[in-house]
Picture 1 (cartoon, helix red, strand yellow):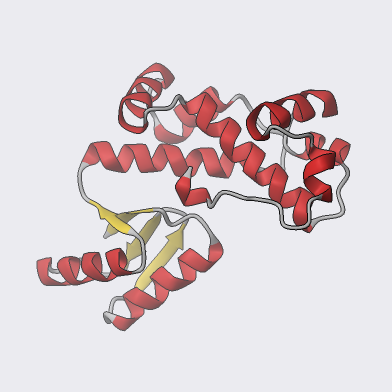
Picture 2 (cartoon, rainbow, N blue to C red; picture 1 turned 90 degrees about the vertical axis):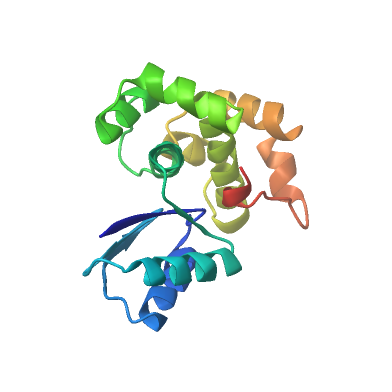
Length: 184
């Protein structure tokens, strides 16, 4: 049985959700960002119990197709942003991954989330840049290359537009501000 879970965006989230399923006596076949596949079908009581426990730790079990698709888009954007290999255009990536026309995905996402997929991806990229600036020794040029920016200047310009400061100024802050990924 495949279940989609909202806000499961990091390895610690995966661990917490995995532990929750184990505590319910459910065998997890696979677990990834945003979804869990169980060995067996869950009963209605198990689904309700899992749903309540997920809510208690900040997640949500998604049961309607529209919400599931929005979450799949969200998780796919996060995966695209963190790709290490050369990335294809986001619109092509989403269309191929979700087997839907990009314009349909874009329209639905904007209606539900109140932000375009493009803007959403920019916000995620900038949060990833912040993470790399805080926790790595990569230069701005290396970060720009890693994240698929056309140039370090493009990265710096977009970073400043979103944060109000340059990557260099951000890196020099003592306690830089980062936004949790599930809050984007």
